[in-house]
Length: 337
Image 1: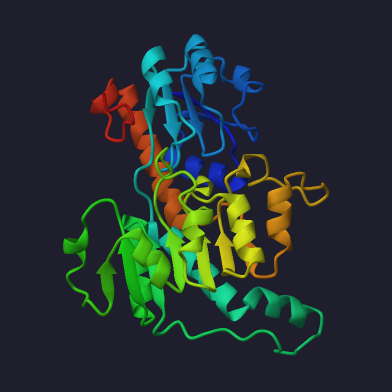
Image 2: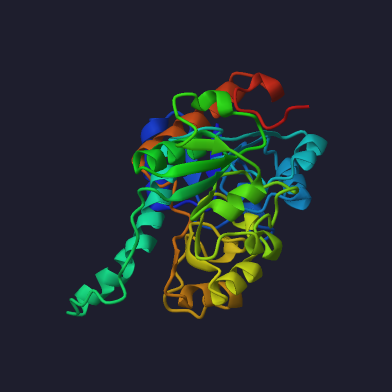
């Protein structure tokens, strides 16, 4: 099949070309899929897209008109894809439901430890010849309470790491998954409601998909319920947090540390180089000024193992489609009705 890749970067091209091994025809575009770039898909049967590509009704209609029959999301989060439009225009859609959960979990822990021990500040001081440790005091992870929202594969990996540090873990999940954690004592892990988790956690980390129901689940009301001085981490989806409420929480010192690998309006900036430009997004620019806030550019998934999983799963779906499978016949179909 002929596949058009959008929002592609060198690391993506390398891994997909290795896994593809010249079977399918791959064409890589650095541009995101938008109304202005959709014409690039002419003569392609499949588009392979990422989290910040535009896949609304009008785009999907255009894809259909140009002969595209398969949309391959090379990610797990698909809130930017209009599935109703896919059904309406008869385009199949697949995604990557699972890839190395350790990639995101370990990045989550890296943010926690960097914020706690002020590694980012220490690094910059040393580069300037300043060996003072004033203001770099952190805290022992051992004995602290970590609230994990979402007990999927990534959440589970985070839970295991945190318990390894000697933390007590509070877990909130819409599904009753307590039976999956019987190897831990009640002193180590407890499933609870959100209010209890907010009120008792020193660190809160988000590991849930973005849905209409949980958009801005972290807002002024939920922040008010949190323990003073809480650390907040988000390596899931930017829309889970109301950024303006987050900024107010930082300014009021209710939130003492923030680690973000995602941002609700990241589409314009993340994965791109704006080092010689002005950041016009006032909220993002403000977050970047806080010394107790670390922002990474949606890179938590970026390990060799995760990229290999993503490429393998995506091209497996393309193989199945080429073999004639459609809809539910595809192993990783998003079209469930």
